[in-house]
Image (cartoon, rainbow, N blue to C red):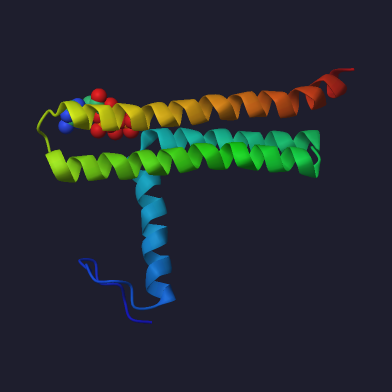
Length: 131
Ligand SMILES: Nc1ncnc2c1ncn2[C@@H]1O[C@H](COP(=O)(O)OP(=O)(O)OP(=O)(O)O)[C@@H](O)[C@H]1O
């Protein structure tokens, strides 16, 4: 496989190169976004709780959806921040503020929804455990 060119601007030439860049993208979000690391910790705790409570397949689907929703929102937030930074740089711009604030709001909404899903799915199992 041809080693990836770090300053490549052309289209990926094969699947290996596309895969490599996708992995770099995932690593970049984890490295640069503090919130993403919190999301990873939360997701790990949810998965451990799911195993401990032995939740069923339906519950796993909802928990996976909740986790994916937050990750998707955080990735989109990172993309929007990067594009805004390319366009306006360090300059204050009211539209840049709108774009970044709305993107941050999207992550907050997704996280809130994920918490609601988690509570709805796990509460019956916790109640059963306590009875
Ligand atoms: N160029 C700009 N023009 C106007 N406001 C800006 C600009 N850059 C950043 N801001 C404001 O600063 C806030 C934080 O900026 P930014 O999103 O770049 O930081 P962050 O810490 O990475 O945010 P997040 O926690 O959402 O990842 C934005 O939500 C926006 O209100």
